[in-house]
Length: 252
Ligand SMILES: [Zn+2]
Image (cartoon, rainbow, N blue to C red; front, side, top):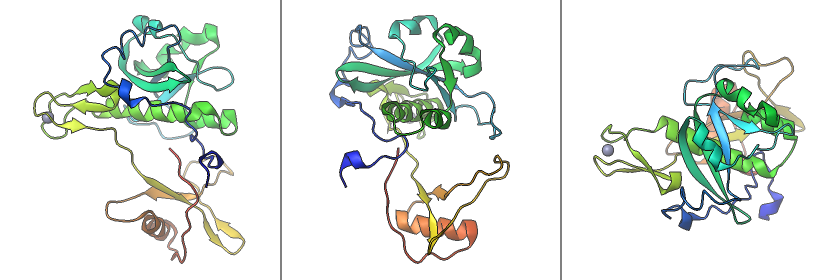
């Protein structure tokens, strides 16, 4: 399967992640000060507007987007006037540096600041629905949100409890007390469509809007393959025995 043929939501990140720049001492200096540098702003999610359960602090974030749903990129100089919790380097977009910054506070506290630009903070799913299909900004949003939320929830060393420091432009946290390195984590999930003949089985969560259904999904566990996770989750959720599993694609 050619890479360009695989189009799942949040895939197709156009950035060159430029690993060699992550240790460049100017990554948050001269490179960030360039005229073509831009930053995507994120802020914590402070409640629910669409019936979903309120997220625990540091586990959800909203992204500053324009009226069309695309990222409302800002000049990094704007960060001087905002309370910033964490800044990371995302990569190069056709040679132009791109960053992500998590604001220290809830999205609703900053909304007024960007009204003149008609920009507002939206959640990732809302952006994907608004764009209505594959879009080059979605992979960058997935990258920025995953990385920045990881920093929010992993400030302290898991080995000794000391506060760790952001290094490698955001791709590592290093503990100054015990020397342990910590890397951004991803939590693998399987999403599967259960089929029997020409029928498909879908489910719905308590409290979902009327008429909303979804394919089944669940977290992978240590010591199992993706296919085994699919069979286990289907059995746990609906009690069915799986006879055959086929792989379709992956997504960020
Ligand atoms: Zn430590």
